Length: 135
Image (tube, rainbow, N blue to C red):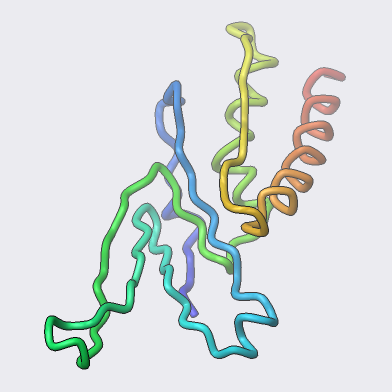
């Protein structure tokens, strides 16, 4: 298990675009099949581990590729923390004196956790909007 320190997700100067990744945990079916956990998130880097065969066609090895994002959230990070670092600054911007528009969208493969994440974020956005607009 990897530990994420919430302080590792530093606040920056409100960039116009912020790209975040949230890793979902292995599901029961994957655990039963003893599937390999092929992604590691160590904010802000995501490592993808791919099983490969050497030229001899027999020997296996792992190839590791890394990708850097504004935030990378492991499966141990709560939706509240994802919201706090990815969406809350947008809510604050929308209701500020410099208010404007903001968009959050989730992109990913079917079953990757988009609905799970966005339902939690939508609830927190609504709660914070009403709180901030009520004074």
